[in-house]
Length: 103
Length: 112
Image (cartoon, rainbow over all chains, first blue to last red):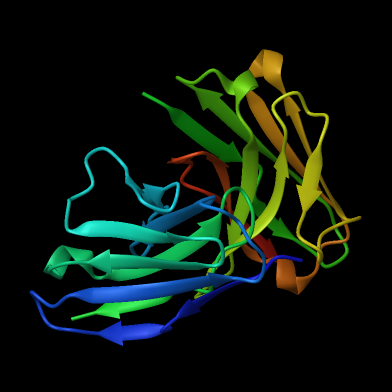
């Protein structure tokens, strides 16, 4: 089965820092990758689809890149509201294990 | 506005069964792949199952294959998950998901 591996599992940074999360797939998934943000007690929120397309209304400090087996989510300037857990997902299938972002 | 509303969760004994439902509105349900995703307490998101728009293809997480069955009724814009032979490891909040749209989840607790 396809596996998605995220790193790091936890990330602590300061307000204004540039933050990068990596997601690796065990098979080539082209750009069939999404990134989600989840806050405690809430359903996940889609941030990025197609590996790099930003969902309407999502702040432009979020960006995604990559194709094939390696992908990244970048927050260009970390804000307090970005404290959350972030997940990558191969479209409609397996998720990464999550990256908890703290300030 | 798209709304997904899950129901059917609750407390069940090990080995028991539950049927989850998800009612969709504000979306042309019959044209979308739909999924069930679960999240055990304090754990990450886990894909459970998905189904093609016409219901002709389904896919499952390995650990639920043979115990869970996903189905849909496009005429009623509804998604279902029949869960049999439940174990403690199935305790989780179960979400219905269609692309970027997610329900609020329904809690399934397997406990004696």
